[in-house]
Structure formats: C-alpha cells, structure tokens
Image (cartoon, rainbow, N blue to C red; front, side, top):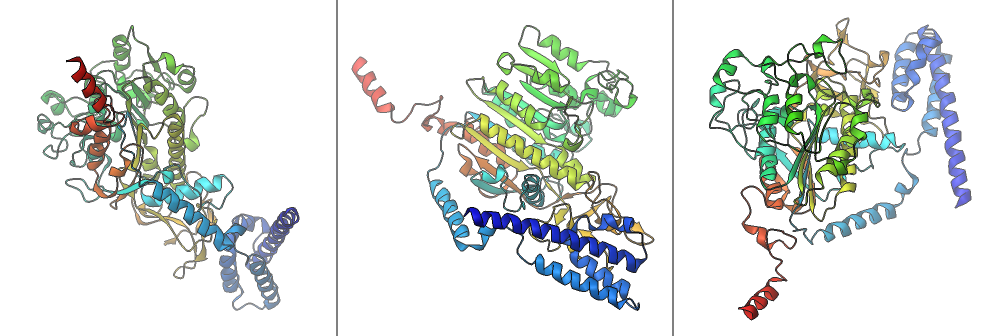
Length: 594
C-alpha cells in the first residue's frame, strides 16, 4: 500500500510537470501564429483544463490559410499528447470501484431507515436560517465552492444543510406576484400569511405604500409568538436590521423602504404610520438579541457616524430628532444589556453576563464576507455564536432568526463570487449553531425566501473551478464563456457590437459580473421553488411541496407556541404536559391520598 501511494504521488507530480510543459508550448506557438508578444498570452493559460479544447479550436482558425503548417502540426501533436496524459479521469481513484458507491449508498440507506423513529419531542429552541436569494443552483454551486476551498473537486462535498435529514420545497409566490420580493416572502415564512410584494407584517388586504391600509391588517410573527410564550428571541443578519427579512419579524409596514422616517413620504407620517427602525424598538419590547447593520437609521439627521465620521452619506437619517440607540440604552439601564458597534466590543463580552445585546456594526448593510475587515466587523458565524450563548440561558428556550442577507445582493449585482462566498459563510454559521445545540430539543430550519436567475452549466468537467470557463467555445460567436451565467443583469456587455470575450478579463476577480442574456442594471429574482432543510423535533413535518407560509406553523407546532397547543400535553419532554409514562403513577398517588 505504501509503494502504491508513493507511485500515485510520483505519477501526479509527473503529470503536473508535463501539463505545465505542454501549456508553455501552447502559449509559445499560439502567440507565434497570432504574431503577439508572449507576455500577452500568459494570462490565457492560467486556467488550463477548461481551455484545452478552446486553444485547439482557436489555433485551427488562426492557421487557416497560412503556410505555417509545420507549426500547426507540432502544436496538434502536443495537444494530442496532452489530451492523452490528461485522459485519466480527474476524480478520486476509489470512485472507480463499484464497492465505493455501493457502500456509500448502503450507509445512506441505514441512515434513512433510522429516520423511521421520528423525533416527536417538543422543540425548546427554534432556529431559522434564511439565505436571502439562496435558490437550489446557488446551494449546489456553494457546495462545490466549499469543497474546492478545502482542496477537493467539490461536487462530492457536503454542506452543513445537506446533512439535515428532512427536505421540502417551498412555493415562494406573493399574493400579487408570480416572482416574489423579500418582504412579501418574509411575511409568509415568519407570520404564516402570504402577502403582497413590498409589504411587511400585514395581510394581502394592505396595499403597498398606502399608509391607511395598515391598521386592521397587521399580522404577528413567530418571533412574537415565542416572546409571548416566555422564550428569549433574537435577530442576526448581514443586512440592515430594518431590511426586509428581519423587519417582518417585528414590523407592520406597507412599504419595505420606510427604513426611517427620513425615507417616508410626509402624508404617511401625517396619517400615523411608523418607520421600520422605530418599530424595531417599540412593537416587541426587549428583543433580546439584535445584530446586523443599519446604524444610520437610528440617529438624527446629519449625526456623524461613529466609525466613518467624515463620510456624510453615512450620517443619521431621522427627521424626528430621536436617537433610538440612546433610548434603548436608557430603557435597559439596570439590566445586563450592552450596545456594541464593532467586533472587538462584541467578542469581549462574556455571554454568561449578558441578557440583551444591540449590535449595529455598519451604517447600512454589513460588507460582503470577502471584503469584510476582520478586525472591525464580525462574521455571521461569530454573531451566531454570541447570540446562541446569550439566548440559551433562558430555561424556556429561544427563537433565533439568522439571515445570510447579502447572498441576494451579490446576485443582484451579478457578482456570483460574493453570493457564493456569502452562502458558504452562512453554512459555517449553520455548523456552529449545530455544535451549540442538540437535535433532541432544537428544531433548526434552513430555507430561502426566493431564488435568482443564476445558474451554471456548459458540460464542465469534474473539479472545474466553479468560477471558471466551460470547456468549449460558443458555436455561434466562437468565444469562450464562464460556467456561471445569469438570465439577466448588469453582466450584459458588448464590445464593438459583439459579446465580450471573457478571456480578456479576469473572470475570477471578486467583483467580476458574470455575463447575462438580458441587460438590466440589477439582476432579478427567480420564481422557482426553493429548498427547506430541517432537523430536530418535528422536522418531519417539513416534507413534500409546501406553501411558504406553512413554515412558521410547523415550527410553532413543534415548540407549542402560537395557536397549536392542544397536543402539547402528550409531548414526552414537554414542560406544559405530563409524561404519559408517569401519568398512571400520579393517578394512583392521587387515589391513595384522597
């Protein structure tokens, strides 16, 4: 076995050196044919495997009609040898053996059979992870990215959410929209009621931007149900804490863009509607954990930001002169409550000595994880860690909403690299929460509000970098294309009236905007179903194809909160009821006493 392993290592090293030699020859001869400087071609062989056939095709076109047949002959022979050397499948050797696949399948089968023993405990704790814009193609691409970051091909990797035993599909449409927005969907998966696009915490009887349709149409969220049941509650997001997803947990607002009164029309203020930031502190007093961005919406207009005092665009926006952070601190005096605005302050806290925390780490949204200042801004995983350790002290349990909100923003910008790295970071947070809780008493659900018109394809080989090229040229314009593409968005670019040649740009750069079929300033949402992953008590209730508003009803049923409580006395671990096995003994004792 040792000799075999050494031989495999030497073979891999030899193959790699041979491939580098082949690519150097390719670059030299291709540049000779094109009469180009060698330096100008160096970037074009940095991603060799998907381009091997592209180079052959391009060389054939350049050599057409030329007399340099000897050069072409040498090049084609070199390509043939390279193809032969690379002909061995680029996947783990063990995958050639049918035993590998049969053993894996049998192991999965045994795990599936174990699920016949349903977890019918009462859920003491509820955690909802919401990947904003995290459609199924995004999940698949992020899985590959996660594996490739670990030095693996990627396709065989498991995300933390992949390990959840129960999976369902969620129908995401809004009451007035086939392709939804994040506000109407948030109302569905948090309040249990489908709603119109752009509205938060109100029924479909409310009309967007019409303040006078708010009153009487308010609907409450599962966060409110949990708080009313005596649980601790928390919100953690990488967007503004008053952005669409978190807002539906506490606000009743007919316009998702009313972040502060500075963004509201005067007639809405005159009619008595409240901005979302204000509702964060007034509607559900004492939300135990609030973490994310959105500082500027809490301060009076023109108040300088504590972190960026020279940037006037980040000044406070409130016209009513209120300092909502100061009001929160005043209300929390005498309690173990802390306001923090940077990572060091957050991580310096001992969660055992903290009951409430308000963390506002940026004036607006938090930065993409790839651009995050690791000294000043906490990661989503770090925020989830602190939140969990604060909330878990409540003997009645907790409800925690966690949003990976900038997945959505990455896609809207056409910047797939940001979107996928945000997804991988949210998956790390899911793993961290799993280590801090138990499936015995914690129901964890992972889902998305909607998808995007994002996809990847092009017959890429196993292990192809997820941000790389497809292994072919277009048979229409004879240009390469990346595996990742968008149906619409800002990546639509023409050069001299033709599609941009992606080999002339750095398509693996963080802010590269993937090509799209239709030009738009911002890419749009997708309308297909999204996945729901579940583990823990009553996770089996999340199966099949469900309306999105079903999610909070199933979670509330598992925790005996909200409107479903009649079954709770039969729960074996319920504090609300008596264990069935103990009931006969208690009846006997009562008979003896009386």
